[in-house]
Length: 203
Image (tube, rainbow, N blue to C red; front, side, top):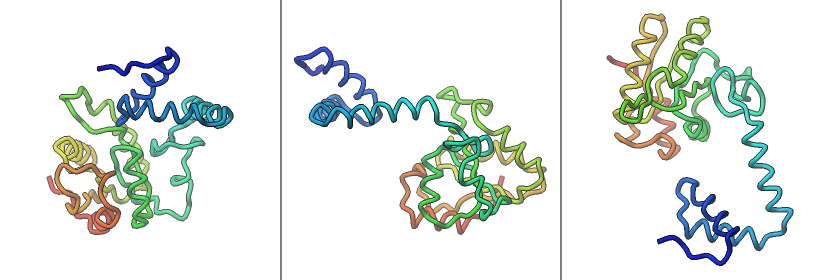
C-alpha cells in the first residue's frame, strides 16, 4: 500500500528515491526527511554532484572503467603490468579486486555477462575491444574473473573461444569463490587468493 504523505513534493521525492536499488518506500521517506532537516547548501551540493556525475563521468577508452579522464588512473599507471589483463563483469568487481591489493595488472570491464534470458548477447558487451587489445600484441595473459554463475561460465567460454588462437595464456580465478556467488560480495581474502591461485582455463 502506497505511503499517504501530506505533500505532493514530498511524495514525488520519495517516489524518485525509492527507485534506487535496495531502497523501499519507508527507507526513501526516512532519507528524504533527513535531507529536509539538513542545511539547504548540503542538499544543493548533493544534487549538483549527482548532476555532474551523470553529465561529466567518462568511461576509460582502454578498459571501460569509470574515469574522470579518457584513460583511467589504473591504465595510466606505468607501474602496473600491462601484459596481464583481468576481465571482470562490472566496475564494482574492479573495486573488489583492487581492495585485495593482490593484483597489479590491468582490467577489462565487460559491462555484463551473456544472458539470453535477459536479452544480453555478446555484441552488447565489451568483448570485441578485448580482442582488439590482445591483437595489439602487448597482452600475454588474460584472467577471466567473472562470477561463477551459469552466465559467467558461458561468457568465459565465449571469450576463451575468441582468444584461444591468439598465443596468450588464458586463466580463470580459482574456485575459492563459491558457485553462484557474485564477485563483488566475496570477502577480500578469498578473492585475493582466487586471483593469485588462478588456473589455466580448460574448455
